[in-house]
Amino acid sequence: MALVDCIPVHLRPSLLLLTGVYHFLMTIFETIFVHPDLSLLFNLSALREKSFGRLWINNGEAMSEKMPDSMDALLKTAHGVVLDVGPGSGEQLPRFYPDKIDIMYGAEPSIYLHPGLLKNADKAGFGSKYRALQCGGEPESLIPALAKVGALNVGASQGAFDAIVCVRVLCGVPRPEETIQGLYRLLKPGGRLLVCEHTVNPWRHGSGSILARIFQVIYKLLGWSFFMGGCNIDRDTVKFLRAGAGTEGWAKTELKYVEPDTAVPHIVGYLVKRT
Ligand SMILES: C[S@@+](CC[C@H](N)C(=O)[O-])C[C@H]1O[C@@H](n2cnc3c(N)ncnc32)[C@H](O)[C@@H]1O
Image (cartoon, rainbow, N blue to C red; front, side, top):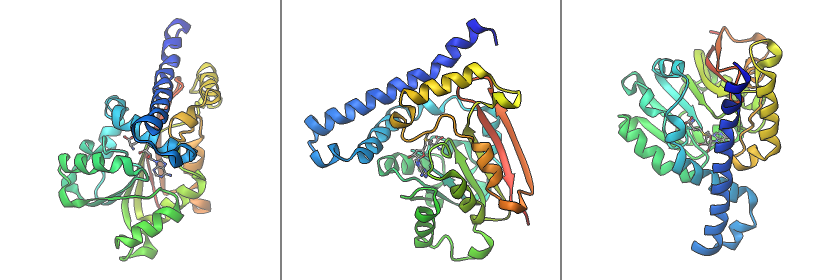
């Protein structure tokens, strides 16, 4: 990409960052003047969670319109028993085929997003086949929540899911390697981890851009993670995904970069657990 073309592309995420700052400030304003709650004001992590919920409720739909083309085809292949990690308010749900899915669990920690999630699940045709759980994707949060709704009762030792979906969520989970190892264990043999995630710019591997990588560092220094709900703009998710299957490795890994020369490059594809 010529320099004159790529600068506007690299600057695009700054609009998102400014939106995050705006919602954080509005959350503080509302917490003081609209629904006064001093305890929330002094609880930074709860304040950030509320602020991200506000951002996603207002912008999630717009932020989900333009997704990598290959993701659509990927999500349409999900079938059987499916776990969606961090579904937000369900903006991706219309991309699935509910007829091919027996039951889908959405592990969404933000309670602010659950009303939208349930509404969108209904709109997408899931009906009673969708279960929203208030938990994260990390094992200590996910396993008890799944056990509570009976999702682990059958064949738990062999894994419970035909597919686990991670769309724009692994950038924000705590301890990504451990979280992905936990997801790996939950897959049935032959089950697939479907991913569409933004990652560190792959310039070191020849397909990215060092300028885009510099922009990632700038966004990080400007507080990207703080204002964007804990999202790490430059997480090496591919490394964590590959390591997630432990020493035996995945049976098959099919991951492709989309827009690798930008500050928000994505990997889209799937990893198959050994049978
Ligand atoms: C950028 S949004 C993506 C939402 C949805 N997957 C999509 O792409 O439209 C990230 C989502 O992950 C959720 N999240 C944050 N931390 C999480 C965690 N530890 N485990 C699971 N989800 C998490 C957030 O609440 C938010 O809904």
